[in-house]
View 1 (cartoon, rainbow, N blue to C red):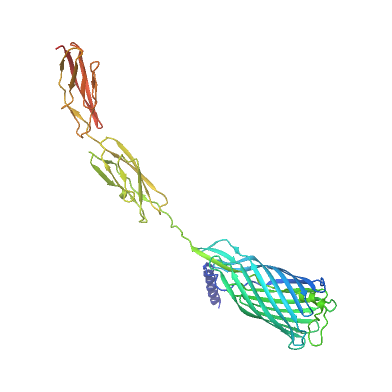
View 2 (view 1 turned 45 degrees about the vertical axis):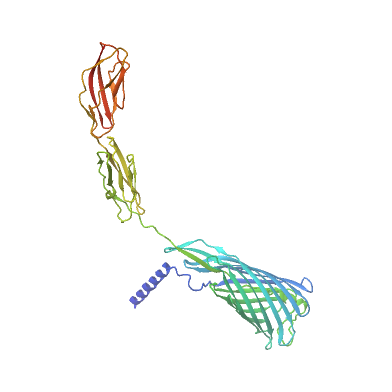
Length: 507
């Protein structure tokens, strides 16, 4: 037996855990706990022979109501009253993330007309109309599993009316039947507005069960809800107008309107009423002072704030955990000549997830570029004998960080060469006569084809060398002086020098 009980406890715990992890709490109807309530109604003595006012209130742990009514007596048979009501209730609303309690507020206006037949069987007819407004309220978003839920309590605007008749089927009883019409529009935000309308019926029964005890039964079958109420009241024989009662009421909501149950004590005191009964009914005499007793019952009474829960959800995208990229050293590269070159650096990087990599580079030689997708670097040889420091960076969308590697590219070249110049060189000319001397042609060589830049030292005064062609020009200074001239040819790959002796003599 003990093992069976343990097994059942494990099953129940598992079911409870699964339910707590689900996001299906919005299914079904919300049931609110019993709300203890105290009701108080005061109907002052008529202000005039034709008017009277009354106040009605409820105080509960999660329920507060205030209602004021003013009534007029048009004739001995006709009466009219207007009521204004404020109702606030702390109700529970069911969402996918669980039940949420919230104070909701509602305002209502009502009007009722009554015609009294003073007939033994047909007592009176009544016509009622009302309008109510309940404010909406937005709740904070809440996460459940992989979804984010936006939650809201949608208020409503409603109106309706009823037409009823009251009869006395037998002594000390009263039966009332109403045909109702109700129209409710819930102001939903996440979906289109929800509109409910339709016909219903209400049934009321009063039975005097003892000298000062009265039993009231009420059943309403309306489009937005069904409502039932039981009340047992006692009239104080010494205090005319004082009534003490016990009541219980239940509202069964429709179309996701929460259920609600209330119970408590009510106290009513109507100034100026007369309790004399005629021989055929339990109804008080509807003479002018009795107007206050009729006004003490409000023209509008909304058993519940008309508001429903609504929500929308969106699946949350949770990024996967990141990882590090792998890499290995990139070797250095060297290219001769001025031909196009290319090499691939992608083999030196890898993504463990298999995701694509993106490459970038800094410090590339002039004219070189990198393909960001394939990692191929291409360019043309510069033959500048320079070393370039390159930094490659690889990134991936699912990587925690990028990684970088550095390497070098150089473009080595063969230095230039030269052969001995004609030596010595004797220039015969008159003093001041121009001369031209070409010593570089056929003596300076660039294996890579780079152009030379020529310089010379030891030239006679007034003479110079063309840096591009290497031709020396100047003016003869007469015979006698001897000059040792050194010519240097320079390319990006190096330089080379040759010397010769220059002598002038008179022609």
